[in-house]
Length: 118
Image (cartoon, rainbow, N blue to C red; front, side, top):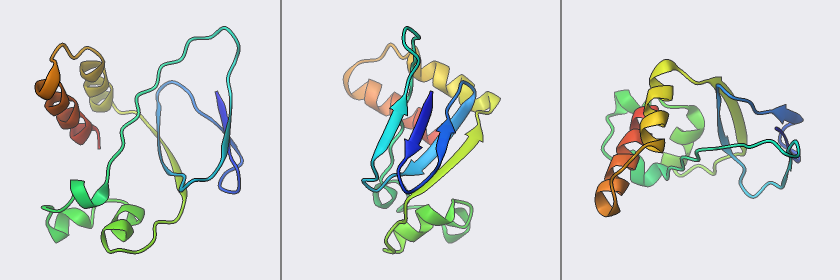
């Protein structure tokens, strides 16, 4: 699949085995899909002010600058980053997809998995 994030990136290829971290900040994007092919995605969304309040200063220094800026009240600029999914990430993603819990337990299970991936 190719995606063009207008005024942020050229066209980027998104493929199996990679993850994408982004803040589109309402930037329009166009996605190009091949007809007849099946795709699955897992979207993980975090709100920095809800996710990081109990992290130490030392821990916060390890997170990407754009997330630290959001915590400091600085307006987050649009960004896009691609990386390779690690073996640990793949294991957690598989567990998320196969989750058999329901209700509150499901939410807690999925959120804890998302924390492990981050």
